[in-house]
Length: 181
Image (cartoon, rainbow, N blue to C red; front, side, top):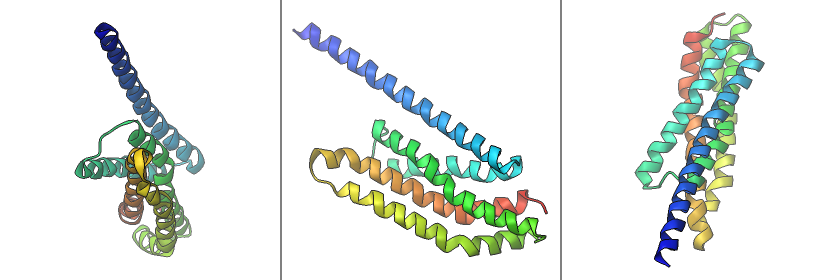
């Protein structure tokens, strides 16, 4: 009887380890695909660099908060990060497009970054608050389901908040230095 238990434990450990490997691989593949699609539509490696930087910065920031809150890296938190990749790049693309448009119209890159970001800041903050308002209530669920999805919801909300902060601070700064008129 005990032998069967140990064999089952070995199989479940292998299953969990393999699942984590697959989710981590999916995380890297999705980052690569997002960057490739951005490059395909923007057509500029310099412009692609800006939203491409926001993805790892936002995800690493989310990992730091997860560690501070004592959450573990499990299938649900990694799934939340995979879902967050598409969300975290949106704010940076909105800011980048507005700054790029101002530079194309003959604006100074530094002034274009400042004015372009100021023009869309409310929209970026509003979309972030809407996403946080969607995901945070999930963390208040009761019972076992609540315990499972608390880490998922907080991970998504934190990643989206950091992406908004990065889109309003780091992205315009990089745009002012990298994009040319």
